[in-house]
Amino acid sequence: MPTIECDVDGARERLESAGVSIEAGNTDHERWRASRGEATAVAYDGKVVIQGANPRDIEAILRESGGRVHLYWDGGSRGNPGPAGIGWVLVTGDGIVAEGSDTIGEATNNQAEYEALIAALEAAREYGFDEVHCRGDSELIVKQVTGAYDTNDPVLREKRVTVVEHLSSFDEWTIEHVPREANEHADDLANEALDRA
Image 1 (cartoon, rainbow, N blue to C red):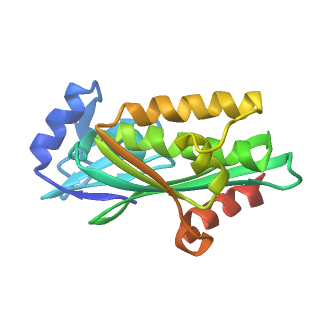
Image 2 (spheres, one colour):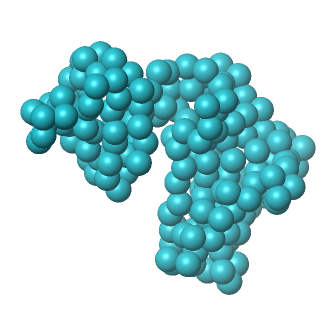
């Protein structure tokens, strides 16, 4: 449940500018409430608390845009191909900004890795970051995206093109291979998704 310390009147204006309707709070302590998609924002003095299945629906509007984010991703399948899941985490100097975990149907391990990276990049763009540093434990994906390895598989080639397009929308980006231990949180999220698949 994300909590954003902010000027709640300014937050209300940002939400209204994005077309989100605002209603009165339910208690004396609530300044106002807003709902969008699968998220509800509740304003108190000096902060907004976001609840619901997908807090990103509102959080991305309220967070200050710009700045640098470190993105960790992981994906996998059981059966290769088989039921697949993805996990990703966005981290700044203030800690974890957002994370995601989802099932993606039938896929190979490499397809799932790409899907996780794509989902993380889309989230980073929604949050308005202009600099992204991607870290994952799939050396193949990193080398394909940087051009060190060719991509012969047509499905992976299409996903690589999507990743490169997303990366080019940032002012600055890097992508690097890290050991599995450095990617543990994203790996755990991908495994949680696989357990639901």
